[in-house]
Image (cartoon, rainbow, N blue to C red; front, side):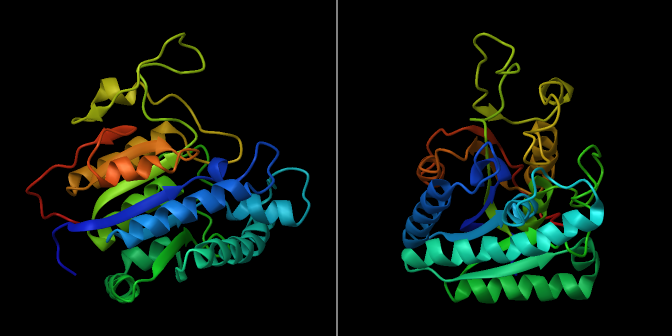
Length: 276
């Protein structure tokens, strides 16, 4: 695969808080809206890779667990059930718009090993050439990096924000979009500050920007603004533009594809070929 960013190749990450309601039940409206917009953008000529969270939450819901499990083995069991349900739903909703999807489950070893990494690149290339939309998640049934990383900052994956940046670099995407439960990065906590200002563009991720990250995300997901900044650092140093946008407004993706202001844009560093 060419080491330069491939124009119109977009990695979109969707968080658990977008795919589920506050009580943990599936949000079918969000699934449908996401599939509709991504399918339409695919029809416009973009190549789409979707990185999806939600396996543990969806699995816990299907198993009728009253709350997200805390024991590692139960989390992995819930993830195994949830992956089946997630792919069933994605297959249904994307199928309604004439699209074929494929599942790719990753662990850290898959990216660390040069041979496995090249096999992954080849698989992504073949799927995209066939017009298929790959749907990616960390293989939580085998890997515990994301599951145990809720309060840790230094993992190769550890959360799907970081995973999506790794996938974007691996595939040579030119854009990475993190769909979250917030419109972007603000100059203060929207829950505390009366009139927070949405920061439209970030060119340098310095200590001042990091100080705005705050704490963890919603209780249904593992990420927060901190993990999004970590993803932005990885993406932008490899020349990839990264956006944070609201997952409840998937139509924002049209603005991003068309180069219009949307959410918060972290500008990729140009002229770099140091893709990892």
